[in-house]
Image (cartoon, rainbow, N blue to C red; front, side):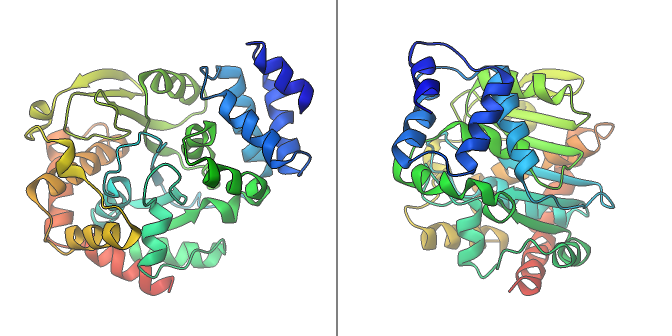
Length: 331
């Protein structure tokens, strides 16, 4: 690792093979926490290259516990995190709304690192027990339309990195990798990213792996449709900059998206929205994201029609039904 660090500290980049090998060696426990921390933080001081990202991604996918859900036309809705906005759990709520609309969701997620409450934090707090048992995951998709793929159970090789990430408490390139390494290899994906530069990288990589995808970045810095500003949308055959008004919503403020300071606070907001007690702003941002996910699955259907489906799923409490059923199955 010392030679790799010296290489990086002189502003040089890694080849695809070098990046792959570095991550495999980290996974094998070849390096101590200080070396891992130095390696991770290097990429907070300069942009990651396409070759480095490919190498890291391929290493994680080769090392992961793969799960076959190819019988279902699943979608993953996963943000990179790391935007530092501390919003409520928009992508997780969106996942239940999409499931409530009749689609199949394989949600890849993890504990929060740079926010108070990640998707795994809130689901675990609300009684969901994570599993990597294929039959249980399939049952959850069959009955509730959704299953959760808790990253540590499918990427056990990364146990050496997890405590370092927690102690650092800032985004690292693992935030960039999260949406790319869903162990079920879904053919559909909506991913939010924390920068326009990363949106471009994702677009380049997804163009070459046969995915039906939408990449999102709100210009005010959010890794989802925040409705606080225009959102950059990059998909298979289009690239757009869309305003909240164009999407059919009012412009929101950051305060309206606040997610709480603790896991219990975040969980309370989460369940309140599902139970029909969300504010207009909270409901709007969830519906906006769910509509885009449905549009990703069915690009031939207008966004307006997808928005109607999303609203019906949330407001009729079909999304709540999916949540309740999924927790019951996975209690």
